[in-house]
Structures are given as C-alpha cells and as structure tokens.
Image (cartoon, rainbow, N blue to C red; front, top):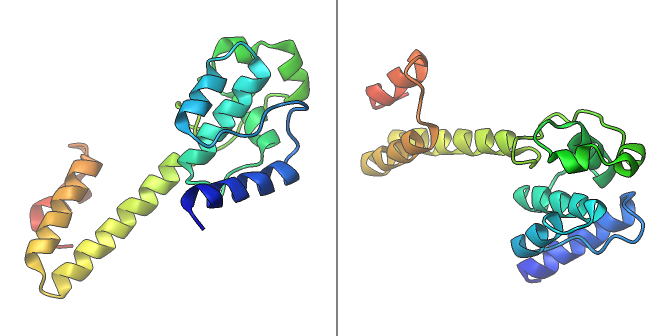
Length: 165
C-alpha cells in the first residue's frame, strides 16, 4: 500500500466516523488542496481545509475528531476573525477551547516535537554509551540546533556543555 493510499484510507475512516459539515468536500490530502480550501470564499469549507492541514501535520495519526477541532478553532484567538464571528459556524460549532491547538491552528505539534526531542536524546545517549563518540557528537549538534536552549535554562545549557548526560 502506498503512502497516498494509506492516507486516503485513513481519511475515509475519519469521514465515516466524524460528524462533519453537510455538503463539504472530501478532506484534502495535499497541502495545496488544504490551502485552497482555507483561502476560498466559503467559511465552512475553510474549516475543512484547516482540519485537513492540522491532521496532515499529525501525519494522519491521532487527531481530535472534526467537531472537536472545529469547536476549538472557533475558540482560538489565532483563528481568522471572519471564521470566529460567522454566526452559522458559531451555532454549528460552539467555541470550546481545544488543548494542544497552536497559533498555526495545528493540533498536537508541541507534543510531537517533545517526543522527537526525547528520541534524539535517547539516541545520543545510546551512541555515546556504545563508544560511537562521533555519532553522539553529531546528534548533540542536531539537538542543539533544534532545541536552541534559552540562556536561562541552566540544566540544558550544562548538558550541552558537558559532552555527556
């Protein structure tokens, strides 16, 4: 099964189980389709575009159902105003905060970044313990670039400076 087929199957399952807008098109599979829907004239279709973009950012994995996401979008200060003040959308999707929704209106990004950071830290530690000093040093440089530890985070700064955990 190709990646596109996997995504299409996931979308079909999600559409069948989600309560979604009557008459809305199928959820978009590509970034271009998401952005077209978001930038279109229909606020209802824009919600579907934002949902598709957010779920794509989750790599088509765990994501809130459409209704929960739409209600969260309506409550989010970063949602474009023309969507938040749409009376029909407000009735259909009463604003309700959705934990994990970020300013780009994608859900769960920070959790996934934290998980990735933890995986990289474990790999660096494992390589160091296995005597793979060059690989561990390379991983440490990757982590430094990704994390960009703030100067006030002494524990992380000390870890970077130490060369070991």
